[in-house]
Image (cartoon, rainbow, N blue to C red):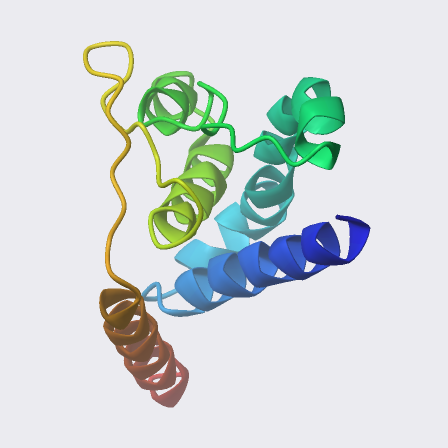
Length: 135
C-alpha cells in the first residue's frame, strides 16, 4: 500500500501540474501552490479507512471525493484549492471505484474508460505545449 500511495500521489501531482501548465497566461502562477497541495490533501479523507484498506476491503472513495468539495472551495474563494481538488477528482474518475460526483444528491460512482483518460492527457499536453509556445 505505501508504494501504491506514493505512485498515486505522484500521478495526482503530475496531473495537476500538467493541468496548471495548460492554463493560458499567468493564471497557473496564482493557483499553483494551493492547487498542488490540495491535489494531495484531499486524500487525507482516506486515513480513517486505512485499516480496512490494508485488510483488502474494497471501499468506495470517501465523500469529500465529490464535486461538492471543489465547488465549496471555489465558493469560499479558494480557487487554487478548488482547482487542485477538481484535478484530483478528474484523475480518480479513471481508476479505482470511480467518484460519487453528485453526492449527496446521488451516491452512484462514476467511472470513465481509461482510453478517455489518455485522450484527456494528450489534450492537456497539447494545451500545455501551446501555452509554452506563447511565452
